[in-house]
Image 1 (cartoon, rainbow, N blue to C red):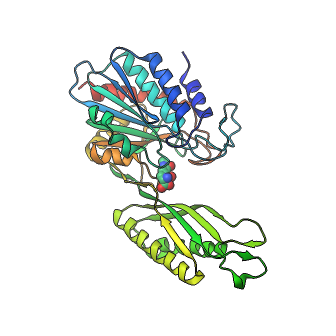
Image 2: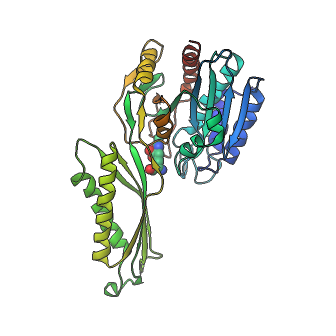
Image 3: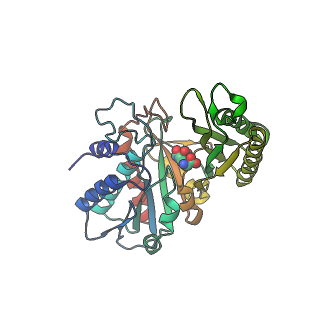
Length: 372
Ligand SMILES: CC(=O)N[C@@H](CCC[C@H](N)C(=O)O)C(=O)O
């Protein structure tokens, strides 16, 4: 039997983008089949997987979700188990999320609890969003849990730490894509062209002013443009440019306001640069709002355990797990993994010591919660 660290390393080598997690799904299925018992059922859904372990005398179903996709980042960790998929990396810790979930499945399959347990290995958390279609599936409907739990690794906390809070934990998000089309031309004759590199540069700066000047400072918002493309070569004025980014807000009202302002600013760019602009909001995620009762109970449980509890502030990260706990009582928490580099960084190196600790803690928690 492989160790959980080896499993994490295997998964780390094969990062895949949302809804393309073919090798990851095959790896997870192989493992799950190798530990399957008569009480365990496995169903695939797109590139994801549902696993159900029937309880001994169930009164409810406990859900546990792990996301399985990776990011388009070129890894720079220097690991000897570095990504074998060029330009892709598990830079958000989903390799650990999956391994921890496999560990819990293994333990609970070996020694069942009273309640039923359903595991969701969910594709496409980074985009375009697998949680919503997964919970709308007939497979989910058949095994719908009464409560659901999810975790996310936290590089800034030490191993052995759990951080969470009641209520709002993660922001509302919306992707943002803006395509600009002007008039290309010779670099030496700007007066005969409408330069979309210049238009895009103005637009990026004006977008930042929305956060500074249109959002209530006590109601945080973020607009990040993570990618700009435009033009073809150094001595040709760019006919097109594209901005790719994301919007984060703590309130739904601010998201609406930010989008209205983006549309107004983009109209201004169209007028001043005589160009055409198309806005596409891509995938949107519902905020992660932790169920007060379950979260408080969980925090008390953590406090009484060998883990260290931090009551954290909300963060501007997004998570489509927010859709799951919109309809089902549940919560998400941060798991400390102590890395010098943060989430979405090419050098993210979570401490593997967090894996066994998390499995053992969560199995104990599930036994406590599911044997009442
Ligand atoms: C935990 C985490 O890092 N989640 C991602 C979710 C991204 C959603 C979407 N692609 C977007 O950028 O809006 C995050 O970046 O917070």
